[in-house]
Image 1 (cartoon, rainbow, N blue to C red):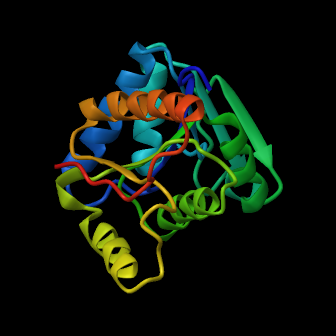
Image 2: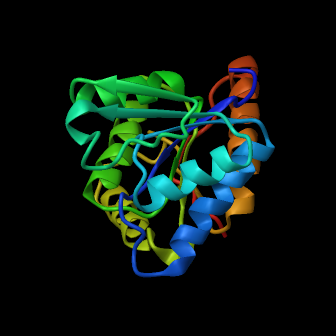
Length: 202
């Protein structure tokens, strides 16, 4: 992967209780459009999902929505998407999102969002991909998850070199961190592997 051309965004179908969450989603949608990076996401119009997609589309960005048929009405498939892919189930949805993305970014969300990011980290741990995975830790939303990973590492259930999880506190830092990770991976392929550990933004 020479550069990032598409980013899969995992996030909630609700906006959450803090306006900072939806502000971050909209800001990232605008950044993706400005940088001409395709947004790949769950296809809905509601919540943070809808906010990031609407912002990307409104600013001339390319948007690929991927949604299972049983959620088309429930999540109101986004009519402004450049491309809308209908799948038979959630498994097919997640697989297609994976195939179409060069990197993964997780905004605040619920159980579904958590399950999606955990799956990507699990696949990375098993050596099934080396695509960058980043959590946008808006106002510390993901602190409990990062603490859990640290706890699991300390208790011997996560190897310190098993995967890399990037973390950013600000939307503006997302793409630079992803691009740095891609560059580091390219260098690693030339010079040999470096330790891959959970990394939090300081």
